Image (tube, rainbow, N blue to C red; front, side, top):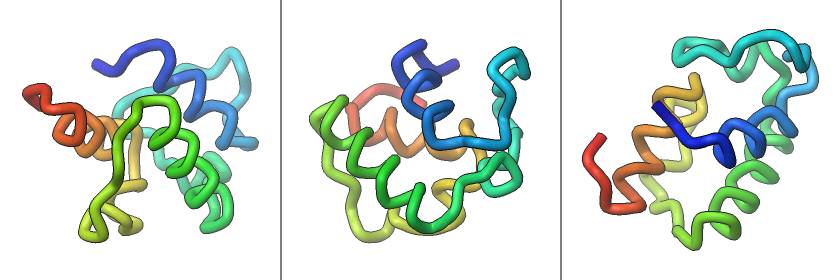
Length: 82
């Protein structure tokens, strides 16, 4: 499971997800309001907060499909096991 900082950052970019609504691993980020502009902003925030750099291959809609897929890429970038 991801850390609280990741969830807090993610929630800031999901306008359709209510504060009391749980963020599950398979929650659709697109259905929760993540559009292409928000995706770029989220990417920049994650890179800054975690001091990582997304490789070109990771910058896809598949990466940003659900919290679980995005966290999987993050753990790879952080050098932790998925």
